[in-house]
Amino acid sequence: MNTAYTAPPEVARFAQRGPIIGVVALIWVLLGVLSDRAQFFHSYLIGYLFWTGVAVGSLALLMLQHLTGGGWGLVIRRPLEAATRTLPLMLLLFIPILLGARQIYPWTNHEEMARNPVLVEKTAKYLNLPFFTLRAAAIFGIWLLLAFFLNKWSSEQDRSADQAATKKMRLLSGPGMVLFVFTVTVASIDWSMSLDPEWSSTIYGFLFVAAWSLSALAFVIAALAMLSKQQPMSRTVAALHFHDLGKLLLALVMLWAYFAFSQFLIIWSGNLPEEISWYLPRMRGAWGVIAVAVIVLHFALPFLFLLSRSLKRNPHKLVLVAAMILVMRYVDLIWLVEPNFQGGRFRVLMDVLAWIGFGGLWLGAFSRQLSQRPLIPVNDPQLPSVLEQMHARH
Image 1 (tube, rainbow, N blue to C red):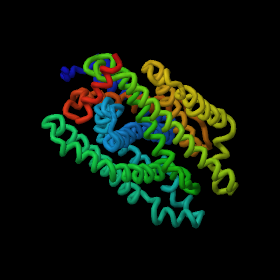
Image 2: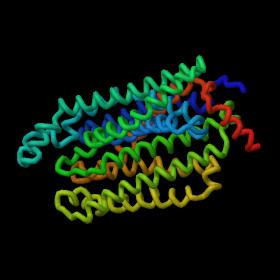
Image 3: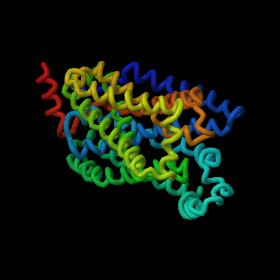
Image 4: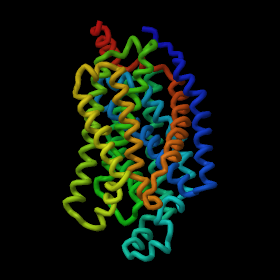
């Protein structure tokens, strides 16, 4: 089989135009500083959380593939690896969040926190900028190390067919999955939950673990559908692989819904003022409408669609479901974050432009990384079985 790889036209266009689109959109968001400095940082945070989630979720799926094996993971390994190599960009883009922390996080206002003895203790021990920055550095350090070694050993496997590289990736992925859950939990608490320092949830971290993994899988399904139109992927990817990815997508949709509903149920049954105060503004007015939309378009419809075997085996239809999930992931993030700001005013334009801006930059970096390596891990021991599945389709 010829494994030589020339980037498809779509990938080349993303690599060239993505950064341009991203910079233009972010400039428009930046102009918002002139009218509302705080809203700029609020929208920036939401866009950042979404695209960082795709990169970090890809790291989780990559480790899951090394642990479980199977053709479904082999055909998406290169897109997953390319996504993890965008993490240095996300580290760089985290700097404005540190610079604008006083516009984003209320716990940076010491006078306001001093009114509540509980918050005084929190800010002294945990919620303070030096410790916040240190935790972020540690989180990114772990993500970057995991991504570095998994990509390094994968490259070694391509060059030498050394089975030791395969074993090392599997051995790292076990503890790596534990580190993934731990770091995403800390990141979600620091970067999102602390927007309301009086509120806390023991499930919030697991909600982000499921959400970021779901975002990454929905994105990589769309990427695979595009790449499978051209060789060598057209001779490697079978309907069976999309079927397996569709089943995993259904599982993650259900897992996200389970965590989201469990958090709501626990807080509703407890009926404590310090807990329900987080949900009350999100269940009223426009936010209530958005909550219903999230339930229907993020869970109910994808769940029903993904029950269909024929849909999961059809890449064109599966991509539509994946795209709907990606859009609703961003809507859900807005619903989680925006009500914490300025009485819950909903700034659609700034939030959308931030999403497009980050998306352009991230997709440009992803496309360049994807173009640097062959799409087929030619020396992976699972490749012969994947090719057999492809031939069996015919």
